Image 1 (cartoon, rainbow, N blue to C red):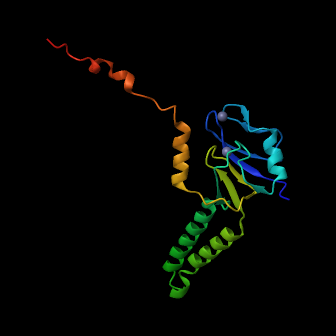
Image 2 (cartoon, rainbow, N blue to C red):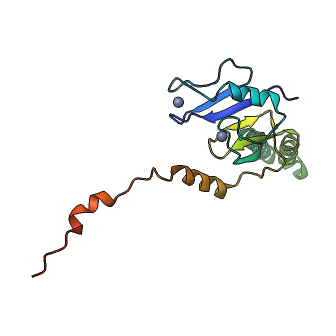
Image 3 (tube, rainbow, N blue to C red):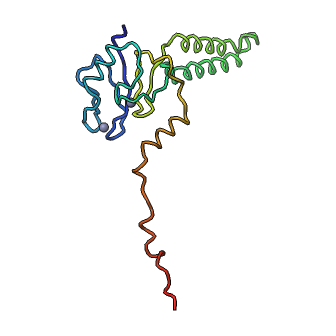
Length: 176
Ligand SMILES: [Zn+2]
Ligand SMILES: [Zn+2]
């Protein structure tokens, strides 16, 4: 029983990044354009399901799995370790073998955090990410090509056409 899910989504109207969780009252609310999206069903879906097979926001099954481990944390740990290594390297009191110890420790901490954080499910179509609900086993890891395909697919039909501007050049000179 999960019972709790965090959602990151982008507003379908203005594209603003919105965070929401199943404990918050109401549906997903965009504070930028002041609109509600998602609906009560989404909360129900998230609260009742232990595994997510379809996007709870838009119903699409074009989903991927990703680690819910926040990348900035991992990078931050490495940066701190790097700074510590530089500091150790400048100190003559530290034996050479110990200089890189912080980097090894950071790699270890990252690996443990990465392993222990549960997966999250993301939606290619509406770009929502769901934390706290296990993604379906069959979902693949994020695929940039697939994401691009779907992103372009969404825009089919709304592409601007330039054919209207070429009116004057299409005039053919009269034959004599
Ligand atoms: Zn909005
Ligand atoms: Zn979706």
